[in-house]
Length: 361
Image 1: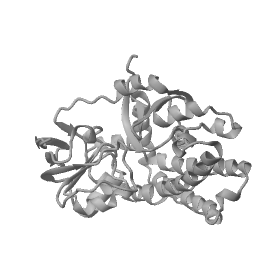
Image 2 (image 1 turned 90 degrees about the vertical axis):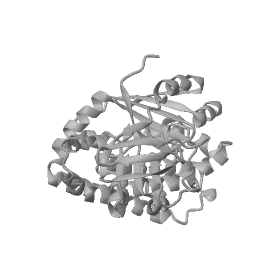
Image 3 (image 1 turned 180 degrees about the horizontal axis):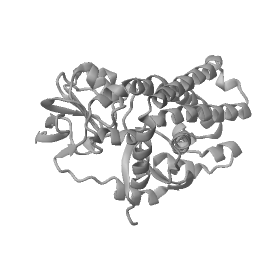
């Protein structure tokens, strides 16, 4: 297998195939507003996490078009309005269903609701994807810290509206897919490993769903999907998820400052956001994939935040500024090479995180 020029852009936990399929097609609104087509993406799921890899060509185009689009204040306000509206629509959709007795509805009605909820989730993701980090890379290159303030309202809207809307839809669909699985002899992970077409037609193979629930790959060519499961996925994992440990990472400065402290590393592999790992102590450096709102219990303890992904509109930057602590985002592999207990230097004046002393194993 010849390695293609993809770069890891984000990871999410426990995101099964039915949702990844809609993730990829959620780029359509951004494409429409910015005037381009996202040509080539790769998604790899294993160990309970979904990794999204984008092509260099696509992301360079997104950075160029994003700079032009977000240089106009009216467009920033327009995107915030889209995010607010998608939250309003999700609330209006879910409110009449809050007392739904899932066990009592017909299978046809169950599937209809699943598909409709997926549509609302996709609308929320389309709003969420409007301010992906690559759209702001040219602003970051100007080395003008005022850009963080310029997009602060957009960053807050990202998590207050579009992400909340998607998460609430996901929570409701978990209930529906659980019941769908019960009626079809499937676990929840297996049920959520179905494609939209298979769900709509009722035609699927249980053995295939079981394979996909453990690991899968989606290759997207202009949002036409090739799905791979089983042993063939291992080659993609070996090709794209091997990382050299250099003892340091470089990222984007989210909030300046220098800290030397032990690390608390939250790895995405098999991470359960409803039962978060314990052991973080006051003053430790929080190393995460992304500073999600679900990790809020850790933030008051952190002396610094380091994230694999993110940009100037990311939640990690907002949190770090609120707590007045150093922050570096978009390190790509911080959680891959650092371990809890490592003594680190976080230099958020230069954007470098390095190991001073490795933890004893």
